[in-house]
Each structure stands twice: as C-alpha cells, then as structure tokens.
Length: 84
Image 1 (cartoon, rainbow, N blue to C red):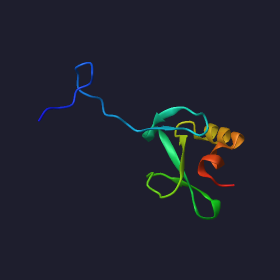
Image 2: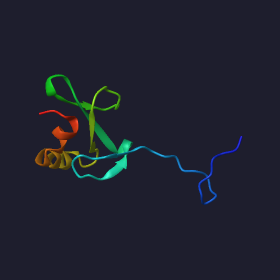
Image 3: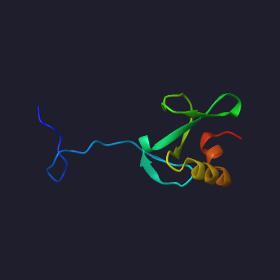
Image 4: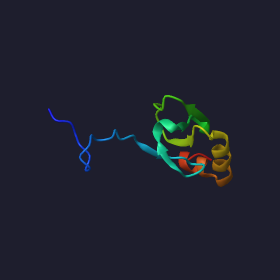
C-alpha cells in the first residue's frame, strides 16, 4: 500500500481542521482554539473536549481573554452562537 504524497513529491502533511476565532478573526488549527457552546436558556458553556452538541464558537487558546473581550465588544460571540 502506498503512502499519499504532496504535490512536491514528499510525504503529505497531516491536515488539521481550521477554525476562525470570533474575537480576532484569525484562522487557526482547531487544537489552538477553545470551543464555546450555547447551552440551555442562552448560557455559554466552555466545551474543552469540543464534543458538545449545538452551535459552537471558537476563541484563541493562548490569548483567550483578549479575544473574548473583542468578541463581546463586536457582539460576534452572541451572533455566532445565535443567542441574545
């Protein structure tokens, strides 16, 4: 069985899913972000394993507080989670 190759001829790189931070709008690999989910009655829940059902939004893991403030200021967190 052959291994997949990249167009350059070398072994193919593992593709990580990219997600966009709702605070800073940077696209990053999913492991670099933390997921927030809209829970019951509009509560926002931190979803560490990223497996909770429902709409989710991502924030940068390393600059989470700054990105959270930016998301709140721009109202992008409530808009992406579709909560009021």
